[in-house]
Structure formats: structure tokens, C-alpha cells
Length: 261
Image (tube, rainbow, N blue to C red; front, side):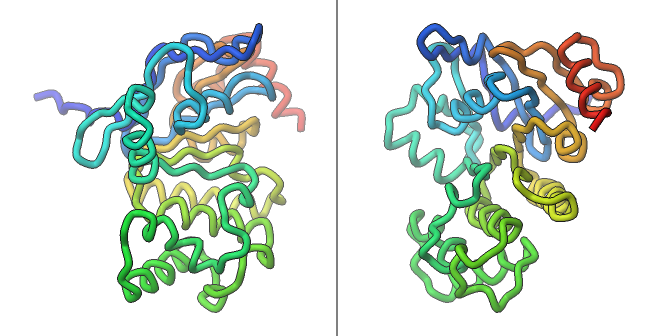
């Protein structure tokens, strides 16, 4: 008997986005299942961040659908839902790790407060549970327990990234979106952060998308890759397959440039 594949957590169908005369995303379709990481790579202006913002509920596509499967198993079209339903879906099922962690943190609130604020927004008020969640997630992202009451502005860039990850995952979303998650970090800090992200995706069995221009990041995190250029998907497939034997001339240029660095 053939084992049935789990239904995708995310289904994107025929998404197109235009800004004036610029076609930022052109008829893009993709899907991601629980426990899987999809990488989207390409140079600046390729459309990858615009696509991520459509999936995250920030940029409405001109055409197409973005369907997210909730914990209940129901698939909801993010852009056909009303504003309240879309906000609820984003709070419960989606998490975004910003390239600049300051965009995803409340810089004047303690680390512990940052972690539990999404739980409080969802209605949790029990102090003991909030305190336990803050301590648990501080440990899970490998931040010292004595930094619970410190504000993010006194943290290093790598620590801010880790705190943002804890804040993003505390509600146990089904879909994690990452925009250049290691941007601005030195190589040793990048390696530790990538190990942490890979471990958390595996443990929590969440679906994830990572947008990056760094093919080394894509190789570590993503099982599958989409290569974008000028709003189009020019190549897609297994990560190792694409990076070891790129077929499209643009992908060949990207891989060649990465090898020369």
C-alpha cells in the first residue's frame, strides 16, 4: 500500500504581483509540508521578498491564492478571508523572522516580555504559564536565563536574532517564514544560528520557507530550492541537485559566483 503524503501546510497557486510597470512575481506556485524547509534564492530585485510578504499576509497579490492549513486541518485562503480572519490566521499559524531583528522585537520590553507577548495577544493571562514559557524558550534558543529581564537593545545581533526566533515560535505556528535569517552576522554566529533553526524545525515539525541570497544558508536549511530571477521561477528542485548540477544559465551563474567567494 502506497503511503499517502501529508497535505501541505502551505499552497501558493499562480501568484502574481505588479508594482507599476514592474512584474515582481509572475505566476508562482509552490507548496510546503510539515517538517520541510523550502529555500527561495536569487539576487536583490528577483522578487523573493515580495513573494514572502504575500505568503505572510503583508502584500496582497494581484492574482492567485495563498492557502494555509490551520491546526484544525482546514485550509484557508489568506487573501480571500476577511481582515479579522486573516489577522487571526497570521497570529495563530504564521511566524516571520525578519532580516533585521529590530523589526520583529519590542525593543523597550524585556526579553521575557517579548517572548510571551504573542501568547498574551492570544488571550493567555496566567502568570505562572507565561513565566514558564519565557524561561523555556529562552533556554531553547540558547540565551542565558539571567537575561530574562534584559531589553533587546543591550543584546548582540546574534542574541537579538535568537530572541526573535523564540518570540516567533512560542505560539507553535504551523508555518515559519525567514527573511535572510543570518544577515549581518559573522560566520561563526551564522553557523550556530543555522544549527538552531534546523533543530527547531525538525523538533516542532513545522513547515518553513527561507529567503536568502546566500546559497550556503540554503544548502544547510532547505531540502528544496526555488531560484527566482526578475519575478520568474527559473529553476526548482532538490537543493543538492540544483547546487551540484544547475540547469538554468542564471542558476549556473549564482552557483559559480558562490564557489568563487
